[in-house]
Figure 1: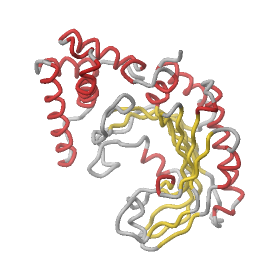
Figure 2: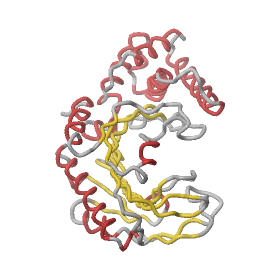
Figure 3: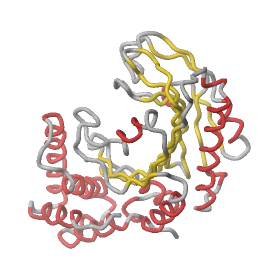
Length: 331
């Protein structure tokens, strides 16, 4: 059974000859790459730079999504393995969905991802992948496409469909869920595949061909790649539960149980998860935060305090948990 460290090591070995650049440092977890938010997606700035600096990158980034609802497969802190590469079009921009260069990039990226599937001996029968069907988007005041002034049409992602059919369970989606787009000036736009294993979302594959620029889609040098949730993949390959498949959470629960046996009861699972994931998030927060970030942290601390009270834990236990996570060797 592969552990978190096994998976991290195998991913690093797999990508060391596939990327020009290995990103060894984490992004700033409370930087300004996502206005008012924390680092909710790995290596955001580096990926945005790829259309203008053609290269390939690999790395594992630490992310934080305090606003998420925690459960057995959703922690606040998580780690994303990111591979991405760009292609120099020589300023010869044509419609990407009719461009053999775009098709080749899709095929190469999906083939590389399937190599990973084979590396981890994953059962293809338990893999589900959603892909974009034909969609009209933009020209609205709400949603992830709200910055676009007019409507755009994307055809169905037939290349991904043809490559993956008869290999995995393939689901067409006619919505923004499988369009890679964010309501942020300069964000990359393209096709998205979502990948689940044993019912757990483990990764995303993207093929970007435009960026948002002053309310319009502007062509770019193509960018493709994938993101893999390291904790999610570990859990999917084991027992679908972070508390029993991720060693740092196993250790944290043991620590809590030393202070209160209720932390080891299924009847108090929700509160135990809140304290464990919450204290880990606090362990990696810098002192300087934006106003919006401070408000998110205030709400989180209240949730942790309520859960600790239910578990019968004293306030000093939180300091113990934060210290433990601060010294935990993750990568």
